[in-house]
Image (tube, rainbow, N blue to C red):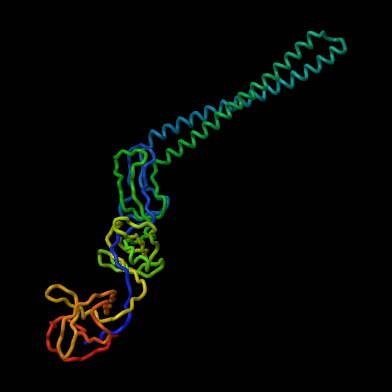
Amino acid sequence: MSVAAQGAVAARVVGPGTVQARVSVTVSARVGSTVVEVLADVGDTVQAGQLLARLDDRDLSARRGVVTGQQESLQRNTEGARAALAKAQADLELARSKQRRDAELLAQGYVSAAVLDASNAALGSAAAGVDIARATLAAREADARTLSQEARYSDAVLSNTRIAAPMQAVVVQRMAEVGSTTAPGTPLFKLVDPRLLWVATRVDEAVVGRVRPGQVASIRLRSGEVLPGKVARIARQSDAATRELEVHVAFDSVPERFAIDQEAEVRIDVGEDRGLRVPLTALTRDKTGRQGVLVIADGRTRFQPVETGGADAQQVLVRKGLSAGDTVAAVAAGLSANQRVRAATAPVR
């Protein structure tokens, strides 16, 4: 038997949830091609940069080869333009030297003015030749820069045929098969970071005010495994229909086996509730299904309906129906109302 007395029980917020990944990445194709090799499967742990699949790159390789050939041809043309500029500059120096010499000879009366006119014309022609050679070289260099950009673009597109993991992760979905055709945006793999798993649970607005980030929690997976965790984040958007907020509880350590969207139950420790306390085993129900306890008075049991509050593994708080000092059957199982019993009061621990 037990005496109802004031006390405290551990307060917990309990709710169903699902295992989610804080970091989830869908790896998609960026070019249209055909899958020729798949190197990763569901459940594989992959490292950042690890090759997951290869796409057919023959068309893109051929295009890159065309650009390479154009670069080689343009390089020869550029070298020719540099040589032509050097020759034009040499011809200009020669024309300048001849023009100065003819000007001196004209001043001394050894040549006619027509000879100097011819030298001046030749000098102008040589200067124009240098300008033309410079413009031709500049055009070839501009073409080289354009082809260099095209080559980089071709290399980037070609690299997209090698599908690599962007981070250390676990493959949770594989949508790629050898022979399947891809288009830009076609999903191939879904990856999650196993170090950043949590359970998304929904908590009623009436009690979510007691939940704080960092509070200790326990997570029971559908498999029966129970793992420790902590409250990581509380949503700021309430569901208008259910009046619930989403609370994310992170695992303290990575579960050995997990599945995204796996069902779980979360229990968050939010402090203590105080009130009139009786053993949890004192609760029973009458023939109509009402919840209550068996109060002991004058050596007989009497069914007393009660309203309960919070509870832990051993004790439950009674909100209504009992008074402090009432004696109840500590274990109601096997007893019934109006049954004679012998009082052996045990204190509530």
